[in-house]
Structure formats: structure tokens, C-alpha cells
Amino acid sequence: MHELSRQISTLRAEVDYYKKELAGLRHRTFGLDEIVGESDSIRRLKEDIRKVAPLDVPIFVSGESGSGKELVAHAIHNLSRRMERPMVVVNCGALPANLVESELFGYEAGAFTGARREGRAGKFEMADRTSLFLDEIGDMPMETQVKLLRVIENGVFERVGSNRSRSTNFRLISATNRDLRRLIAEEAFRADLYFRINGVTLRVPPLRERASDIPLLVKHFVQRIGPRIDSKIQRVHPKAVQMLQTLPWPGNVRQLRNVVERTVILAPRDRLARIDSDLLPSEIVATPIGGDSGGSTLMGVPLREARENFEREYLKVQIRRFSGNISKTASFIGMERSALHRKLKLLGMAERRDDDDED
Ligand SMILES: Nc1ncnc2c1ncn2[C@@H]1O[C@H](COP(=O)(O)OP(=O)(O)OP(=O)(O)O)[C@@H](O)[C@H]1O
Ligand SMILES: [Mg+2]
Image (tube, rainbow, N blue to C red):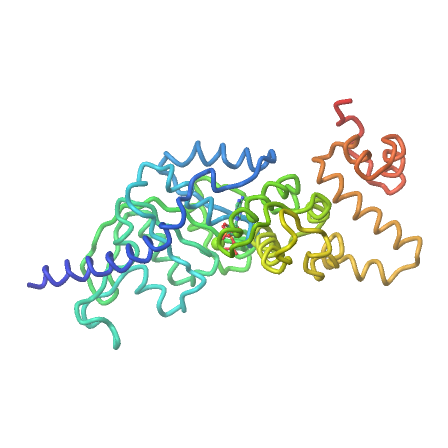
């Protein structure tokens, strides 16, 4: 009888979970193709995903907010040997500290007030034989970290309010945009847990380091939003795309997606197949190059220094855009290559890039 009600509760939790998961899956399958980009850093990332996905090692995905960590986690799972079962996802940041444990470990009948009579399976149990994605792991409370460590090491845990040990076997994928080393130094994250979750680290590069991916991403988002809002706009004007490539994108791909979607939604319907720069939201056009440092370092200094600061920021972004290629940068910004070299020297930016051109 007791065993039966336990099984029912496990099944119920599973059904709830699969229902939600299915709703999401109807719209997308997450593979490597979902990760748009052909910059060297994205190619390398995809190559690494392909290599590590089939191994059962724990993967730690690091990267700034909005850079695509969740896409990476799904791609890893979908290329893994555990792909037939849906990956179990826990957002450790979204859960109040007192609920994290019952969510992860599940609970036994009558474990606490408000608990279901028959108890409930937790995510560790549901993730048996599939992948467990612990998102925002940097936000996990210290007490939970200790317990997680034990589950990772032995595959054994107890539901809240129970002495009975259960075993589980999941492949761990975790992610955070927080700096775990710093959290460790501040004693907010356990070093031993860090070493356990981090069989391999995959770093998702911020968008400003791969501005060459922006045209493809813009196209991708335009084509994706179009049918949903019945818009015939097919592409963004090349000038606007070029401008987008010079912005710092602190919110990374998520921010770019929002800008593109908003722009398409707000564009007049008679403007078919193009979006001009003037349709881009003004706050993003007005974002100073180099992020929030731009305004203060320009306004608080004499003109000559301000001009040099601006030139430094401007050139830094442009050079990055062309992956360090001075000839391409020079031709884009309308300068002779030799003049650009002189300028860089003058601004104290000449190091490392004297002989990197292929011409
Ligand atoms: N390379 C990419 N190609 C296509 N879409 C992308 C790419 N990277 C990110 N996105 C899109 O940008 C949005 C943010 O991505 P995601 O949720 O994976 O970021 P994240 O790193 O998990 O962010 P956070 O730290 O805020 O949780 C999503 O809509 C995702 O589909
Ligand atoms: Mg995320």
C-alpha cells in the first residue's frame, strides 16, 4: 500500500513535469543548429559541445547573462546518450531557499505543513537515467550545496522527512553567469563542489567578442518573429546591422533578440523587407560605445583627451569586429592601413597586431 502510493506520487510528479516540457518542445528542438553563429569562438564552442556531449562527465557552462548558456545545456543533452528522456531543469535562482531542498530531494508524506499527503519525488529522482540541468547554480544556498555534493559523489539521497536512502544516476550540467571563483573566495560557494561540477567548463563568449555573428543572428531573429506577428519584413537594412555590430550589448544575445523583435514589431507595415537605422530603439542607438564608461570618460576631461578616449574605444570595437584584421578595419572605417597603424601606435594600442594581416 505504502509502496503503491509512493509510486503514484513519483508518476504524478513525472507527468506534471513532462506536460510542461512537452509544451515547450512543440516549438523547438534544441540542437547545435539552434546555436547561431560562425565566428571562431562559436565554432570552437560547437566543436567542444560535440566532443563532450556523449561523455558522461559533468559540464559547467559559464558565460554572461543572455549569452546562450541554456541553449548550450540543451544541445549537450540532445547530443548525449541520455537524449531519449527529457532533461530535468532546475533554476536554483528562482527557488526560495526553503523550497530548494524539497524541489531537489522530494519529500515524504507529512514532511511539513502544506506537503502533499502522499509525498513527492524531487528532481534528483526524476533525473535518474537522464541529464539534470542546474541553472544559476551560483545562487544555490550553502547548506544545499553540501547535500548536492553528496548526491553527486555517491548518487544517494533521502527525501525530506525520510531516512530511506534512494539512489539516482544523472548526468550533471550546470550553469551560472556569476563568477564562481569569486563566490568561493567570498565563501558563498564551496570549492569542493566547484571541482565536482566542473568536469569540463564550456565558456560561452559574450556577444561583444563576436560581433561578426550579429548579421546572422539578426537574420535569424527577423525570420523567427515575422510569421508570429504576420510581418513581411525579411531583413534589416545593412547599415542598421553594421551599427548594431558596434554596440557593446551588455545583455548579449537576449538583448539583441529583444531589439530586433521590437524593431520588427514597430516597423511600419508598408516598409517591406527592410528596416532602416532610424527604426531602431533610440536608447540602443544612444548607448555609448564601450558601455557605461563612455559617457563619464568623455564628459569629464578636456577635448583632446575626450577625442583620444573616443578614438580608442571606437577603434577597439571596430578592430574586434573584424577579428583583429587591420586591413579590413581600415577599409571599413575609411582610413589607409598605414595611417591606422600610426594612429594605433599614437594611442598606445599598437601591441600584438603589427603583423596579423594576411595581405
Ligand atoms: N547563439 C545563439 N543563437 C540563437 N539564439 C541565441 C544564441 N544565444 C542566445 N540565444 C537566444 O538568446 C536568449 C538568451 O539565451 P539563454 O537563455 O540561453 O541565455 P543564458 O546565458 O542562459 O542567460 P541567463 O544567464 O540570463 O540565464 C534566448 O532567447 C536564446 O534563444
Ligand atoms: Mg539561463
